[in-house]
Amino acid sequence: MQKLVFATNNAHKTDEVAHILAPNYEILNLKDINCLVDIPETGNTFAENANLKSTYVFENFGLDCFADDSGLEVEALNYEPGIYSARYSGVKNDTTNLQLLLKNMEGQSNRRARFKTVISLLKNGENHLFEGIIEGTIRSVPSGTNGFGYDPIFQPDGYDITFAEMDMSEKNKISHRALAMQKLIAFLKK
Image (cartoon, rainbow, N blue to C red; front, side, top):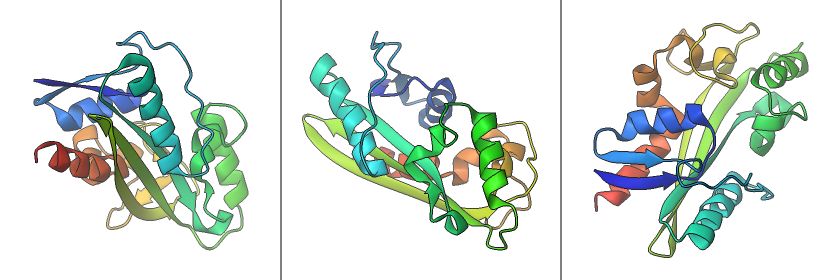
């Protein structure tokens, strides 16, 4: 089993990725390598933020690693919250962020949105980027208890349920993170 450092403190993301990569990879997160710093995400794009995190771990711990940055882009809100998805309301709180998004969507007829993930892999000192996008719509009322973040209001195209109504194995087949991870895995198997 190959060990990979995932530059995140988010237990939900770690579990989701570990589920996707099992049984061939053991995923270590920042806590596992005793990295207790909240790595600044000061980039202007998902790719820049992902690269900042993977570079930090590589430079400070000397470990090959990957990092992702993900978010929800809503057409009617000029693709907000985007890179600010985790702190859309000014605080890192899923419920508060979701409620603000729903408030900002009131009266909007265009409900189109997409989840986007960019993964930055630093392996042997080289950076590689992998992107995953899933298109869908924003529901006006949350539904489901699985997942996290905006999952209760995001309905992917071709489905009549939200991400939060899917079990993890179903979501992991189609999610933005799963699509980016599939590209990462294909690269790692070369």
